Image 1 (tube, rainbow, N blue to C red):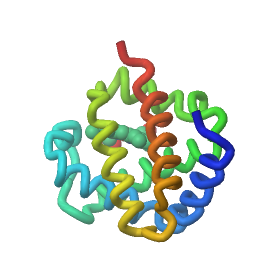
Image 2 (cartoon, rainbow, N blue to C red):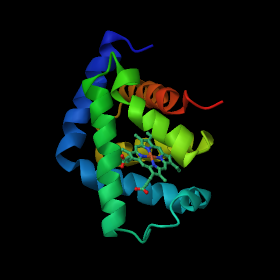
Image 3 (cartoon, helix red, strand yellow):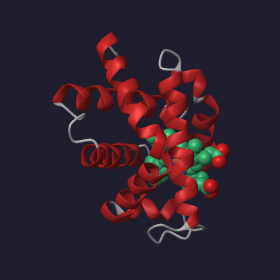
Image 4 (tube, rainbow, N blue to C red):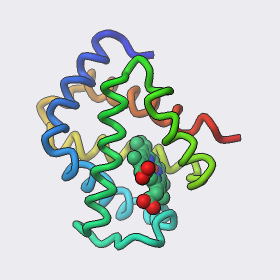
Length: 141
Ligand code: HEM
């Protein structure tokens, strides 16, 4: 589980992400679709060309949900419960794809905040994304 210092690192990284949440969310998705092209099958209705309006809007939504999780770090389960139902019951996203997305988000953060992504911060953010994933995939069976 997240230690006090993990939570402090996560809040600190989030404060850097927040002003450019849409751009970083969009870059995360661009990396996801390029590196793990099978993830594109969930978005047949999207224009997935880099920088498309749909990609930006979705990047902004995904980062928005990450922000909600950061702000409710002791209660991520209830903060994201609607989103959990959506991904499990409506979208039926195979949970393996969450690992791919988390990886692409970490790469994006490492590229943009090289000085902040120390080994400790990296580990804290990784744990945090694993927690978000656990919440978003807990309704599966
Ligand atoms: C929709 C967040 C992982 C596929 C959404 C929405 C949010 C979100 C906020 C919009 C919900 C709404 O409009 O009410 C997240 C977060 C994730 C995550 C925080 C993990 C950290 C994934 C993964 C996939 C995926 C791994 C599949 C590769 C989708 C799809 C939609 C969606 C297909 C619907 C898009 C649309 O038609 O507008 N997600 N998601 N999500 N998500 Fe996720």
